[in-house]
Length: 123
Image (cartoon, rainbow, N blue to C red; front, side, top):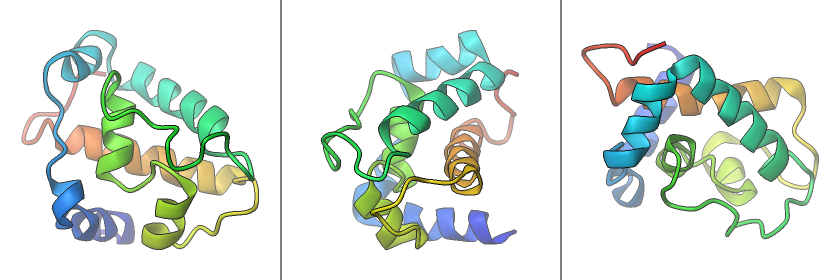
């Protein structure tokens, strides 16, 4: 288990974060589109809604459902800059660099893939 997996496991034990699961339409998006497309969606959403130094409506910009990336963001505490700072040590107030964006996208995609355990999600 690497550091990200250990952190996601610790976050998943938090009462609020533990209740998130992929169900219904959110799971169907992964089933129909595959993880490659969902990863691209995550990259785009993170780039637009989380990466700026001062995101618009920070703390309220991530819906609770409607796309698997949104559900995963809440489950992994990557939903706003405050959660990123508190849970992942990525401080607010600066635009996310490429490594930080990649880290957030990887956290989201690992959580989604884990929802399919023991079988991997469709590519």
